[in-house]
Structures are given as C-alpha cells and as structure tokens.
Amino acid sequence: MAENKKTWTEKLCESHGLPKVEKIRGKMVGKWGAGTVAIPAPIEVDEFMKKVPQGKVTTINEIRKGVAKKHKATVGCPITCGIFAWIAAHAAEEQKAQGKKETTPWWRTIKSDGTLNEKYPGSLKLQEKLLQKEGHKITKKGKKYFVEDCEKNLKKF
Image (cartoon, rainbow, N blue to C red; front, side):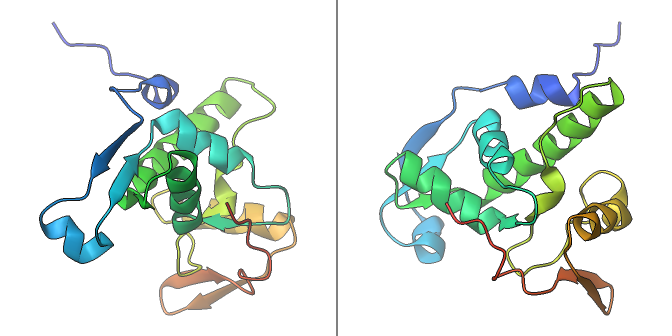
C-alpha cells in the first residue's frame, strides 16, 4: 500500500527535533569557522521570509544571520535554510491554490548573489514577474536573472 505523500504545508510544519544549536566540527570548521551552528525548524525560515515587506528583498544569507542571532549561534546553517526556504515557497503556492489570500512572499527571497532562484515554484519567470510587479528591475546576464540594486532594497536580519 502506497503511503500518502505529504503536502508542502505539512512539510513546513514538521520540526524533526529542530531548532537546535550544535558545535561546528570537522570539515565544517574550515567552511564556517569555530563556534556553533543554528539549524532552524522549517517554520522559522518561513517566519523570516514573511518579514520581508513589499518593495524589499532578502537573501538566504540574511535569513541565516537572523537564525544565528535568534539562537545565539555563530552561524545559521546554509543547507537547511536554503531547503526550508524552498519548502516555504512551495507551501505558499499550495496555500494560494487552496484559496488562502495572505501567504509567504517567497519571491522576495533571492540567492545571496542577487540572482533569482530557479528552484522556486513557477520557474524564474514567476519570480521575475512578482518582483517586477513590486517595482524591482530584473536584469538577465547569461542564463541568470538578477535583481538590480538588491543591496539598496535588502531586508537585513
């Protein structure tokens, strides 16, 4: 018997024993330095994404800073913050499809170098359209799309 697949919203609400703060060990010391890493629960990343007002953008690195600060850790985990932002984006679109009016403005969370995230719902075109609707100028360089002057409109945590 096949197990029912979890919805994006169910995945967003799962905590798996998170959040937690762990000592940075092994190879990760070379990447992140000494100290501690905060591993957020998915819903925490979603909460940071909801704090980005219209006309502003944020990055996964800014969310990581917010997670680290919240948990008094040296760094926020880049892997889980990225995965959980992706889950939050898909959960928001799932909720929107079910008729929910106010959902997480996932399109305002971009990659740390200012590029749009091709793994978000609706491909790059949807994120581009939603950002342009809020007044952001999007530039294409090669195959990548960038938010122009994103530093000027960056929501910091």
